[in-house]
Length: 279
Length: 263
Image (cartoon, each protein chain N blue to C red):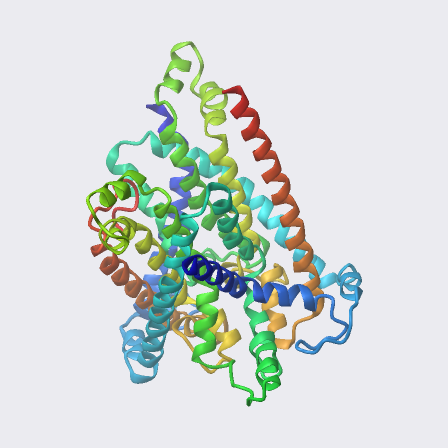
């Protein structure tokens, strides 16, 4: 087969733009010195020592916590939605799925920012609350607002993969379960849900990873008070200029995500073959 | 009955949640006041000012230029790579595919800072070129992932048959393989284009010299206050995409009907 040669340009591209950069991050993470001057680097663990102190661990803890909660909420809201859509007729189904994709065409920074108009002190929701005679609530610049932003931005990533598995489930299996006397609850817990696990796992990873690493949602809706690990990395690279410390945090973030994916894929017993076996 | 109402209500609430901010954006693009939250009457003035705002128009220009270039380049490299990968023996195929998944699964911010480190290492000046290279890098994997399934569906012996009949490998590629996987290529190109238009994180870290796209422009606006002009622009972009979608939908429907009749 001579056609495999057509992949060579991309293999070169992978080398330069994917592999080398990751090694550079590793190199930065395990060295210290002036970030601007490569000759001043010395091998050192000081970046990691600095990270494993209460201040930074607290930020890591908060990031994991918020990402975890938002993933759970997305799953709780998204699974029923995907299930409802998958039961609709062909045409309606496609329109509903499209309606999940359409919001993503509008710039997500703007969409997230628009929540400030809805949630703010003089915002729409507080307007209604004060109209019915209650006191206005503090809805923005706190943990809950950041959570809302995450659920809002990442919910489609949960619904779409679950939906695409649910529509492919063989109807005969469900009929067979009915014939064998299973009630609707049993059909769901014993047939439909187990079959949809691969979609659930894809959904969880697609929500957890961006939620864990975001820095925009927290800086827009958290009012800069609620730093997440993404904000710390951003600060080091864009403002403070300590690329070594920033790189070590990137490595820690990657390790965390790999661990999460390893745990979730444990639940996926019948993993399909093909690409991505390592992940 | 109760169940049906429950389902309807649930669907309605979820879609309300998804569309509330979009409705706010569209409504406030017609608001005759700079501050958000206060309705001061209907106006078209932001739409008129949009076409006078040099900063935003330049950001729009860079956004579209980079999206078009990166979509074209990544579609070419990605399609060729997918064809090559599908012809690779098991082990090297697995390695390349796993490396290909890296930018998909890696958090955006890690991809962004690692590319930033690369450009610094190569002493490239941050600007248009670095941003374009970064966009190509994160787009190619998606092109490959949308072309590969089409190659899998394709009859493996088609290209061989063409070559047995005297076609050169390049001719077979051009006349047999590419037309066969065209839908996958188009999907891949469209994904690459939208990803590029939408990207913030990777552009934010890998640009310089005053080159910015719309996302970066919006991000800096969130610090000093959003200019309603940007609401007007997003409303226009949103509506044009909707119209495009309706046209595509009508066309595929028509195609489906025609094909249905042929059968």
